[in-house]
Every structure is written in C-alpha cells, then in structure tokens.
Amino acid sequence: MRVFHCEVCGAELFFENSVCVTCGTAIGYSREEGTMVAVLSDRPICANLNRCGCNWIADRLSPIGLCFSCTLTRTRPADGDIVGLGQYWIAEAAKRRLIFSLDELQLPIKVSDGFVGLAFDLLSSSQGKIMTGYQNGIITLDLAESNDAHREALRASMDEPYRTVLGHFRHEIGHYYCGLLALTDDRREEFRSLFGDETTSYEDALQRHYSTGSGQDWQDRFISAYATMHPLEDFAEVFGHFLHIADTLQTAREFGLIADVERVDPLETPMAELLARTWLPLAKGLNQINRSMGRSDLYPFVLAQSVIVKLAFVADLVTHANS
Ligand SMILES: [Zn+2]
Ligand SMILES: [Zn+2]
Ligand SMILES: [Zn+2]
Figure 1 (cartoon, rainbow, N blue to C red):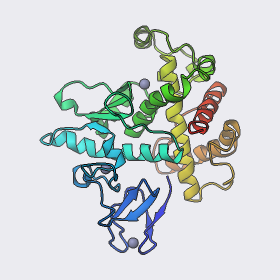
Figure 2 (figure 1 turned 60 degrees about the horizontal axis):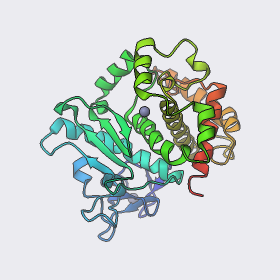
Figure 3 (figure 1 turned 180 degrees about the vertical axis):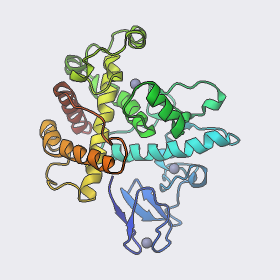
Figure 4 (figure 1 turned 90 degrees about the vertical axis):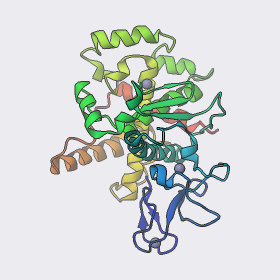
C-alpha cells in the first residue's frame, strides 16, 4: 500500500481515510487517478459510503453512483440483516485493498456482464450455510469470516497459521487469474509441471484431503497444508501469497523499512533474489517486532525451494498479463 497526501493541506492520508483529519476535507480514493483526492460535486463519493463505509470515488460508468469496487459486488446482505451488514462493512474494506493491489500490478479485471467476468457474492450465513469459494468468475465469501472470534476459532480448529478476510480474497482471486493467465494454451504445460494436472478429480481430492490429511513433509513442496489438496488450490494459495508479498513490500518501502529500494518490485526483481535479499530479511524483522509486542508471528510461513519456483511462475504471469 502507498501513503497518500491531502491535495488541500498536504497532510498524510491513509487508504482507509474518508476525511483529512488535519483540514477536514472529505477525501476519497479515485481509482481513475490512482490516488486519494478531495470529494467534489463532479467527483462524488461512492453511494455506498453510509452502507459499507466505502471511501472510493464513484465510477463515472455506474448509473447508481457506485465505485468500481462496489460495482463488483453482485450480492450483499439484505437491508434488514443488521449482523450481515456489519460484516459486509468489514469485507468490503478488505476487498477494496484487494482491488487496489490488482490495479497496482496492472492485472486485468473484467466486470461481469452476467455471463463472464469477476463478481462477488458477500453472503450472510445467518440465512444458512455458505461456502467461501470460487466458480466461473464469482467469488463467494461467508461473511461470518468477518467476525474475529468466529474466524480465529476456525483457524485454530483447522490448525492454520494464518486466516484473514483479505487472505480469503487473495486466494479466491488466484482461481480467477489461474483461468485467465495460467491455464492458457501457451502456459498450461508449465502450470502442470509445477502444480500437477488440473483435470484431476476435485471431489476425490477433497475427500482424500479431509480423510488422510496433507502428509508429513508437505512443507518441502507447498506453501500451506491446504495447497496439497489439488493443483488448482495449490496455484490459488501461491497466487494469494504473491499478493501478500507484493503489498507488504510496497507498504514497507513507503514507510522506509527497506534499505535496498532497488529490490522491492516483484515484477522487476527475479523472485529468488527478491525473497533472499529483501522479503525474507523484512519478514524476519516483522516477526521479531510482533514478538516484541507479545503477538504471534506476522509472517508464519516457510518458503521451500519449489514454492519459490512457483512464486516466480506467478510473478511471470502477472508481468505478462497486460502484454
Ligand atoms: Zn487536508
Ligand atoms: Zn464503493
Ligand atoms: Zn480455492
């Protein structure tokens, strides 16, 4: 994430701000201009400001005054669903950060026309069981994941080192880009050599994963236990991880936490070099900072050699996504 400055008084602004706390100017993030700007009559704030706290400038193409990020949400909790709407507020904030990251990496986002493209169903599980997942361009999130106590209980019960709403979005968007960038005529063979045959039965893989587990030595080849389940899940996990690294490196550079600013861009520095010279030293320091504050590690992952090769493949896909 970048740091922004108020165009009226020059004070520092963060991505989440809707008002400049120094001069009181109403502020929004303009996707078109790629920065935080003052809200004006010809530059209105998203119509969802009071519905989900959205602080993005309305998209000129939206007939109902929504921003680009809110336009991508196909389903949200009903107006009377107080619990669901509170969770939706949190989920949309994570989603805006996701969309910002995709834009920073210049990844294409095709808006759904009802048949193809990207859309989000943010569903309240007060109405019944919801499965977080991806299918044909639609990312579904069980909004209960926005509840810290609920999500933390799930994380512990599944023995996961990391579980966040943003992490869910980054994983699911990996499925979207897998179809768009990796499972193409010219990249499919490379995909299979790294991740395996994506046509392997998903149902069988799911059953095997939840009956026999991930095996003892999964850390030697995978970024997470979940990635062992199926080649498509492995790719989504690695893609999500790439977004973790790209966003965190950008933030660290913005706040002066990286000495070697030549090696922070995952699209310009070879992956092995980026990780060894910049990312892993930073992650080690961030973990120790968390421990200094009595918290668990910020970055609870180990990168095996084969995972580094998979991350390099993703970086290459992203680099060529727009060419
Ligand atoms: Zn200001
Ligand atoms: Zn919005
Ligand atoms: Zn998945």
